[in-house]
Length: 173
Image (cartoon, rainbow, N blue to C red; front, side):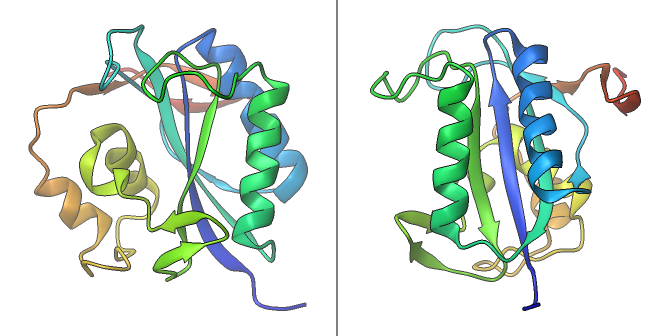
């Protein structure tokens, strides 16, 4: 078996949030088995006037290509009611994005890596720093914890009480 690549994936929802986050975690567990999972955070919608989001990041190890993962995630989003063609900044049942694929930099199978949102959005960087604090961003070479500690855009997020498959994932502070 070839070496598996570490991949970090962001998950978000602002429509029936608990249902769709759990559905995505169930699917990922079925596909990849065990994986790392960050606390779940609630945050205000960024870029549009909408309901607050639940966001988290998961870390998997896989032999799948970026393209295969992207297609699988788009299918999962569609199976969970995500409508393609909706405005970029709009409500969504489920949003899965590949943040990093090992140390890959550049466009792979139509996916830009690492994803720019890592450095822009608290709801991506904070959960990534939670599960991969010492991992370095493939471009700026700072750890995700260092990046989070230096983050100050004013975007607000807060941990929520969230359980999945009988295990506590996060607790509100």
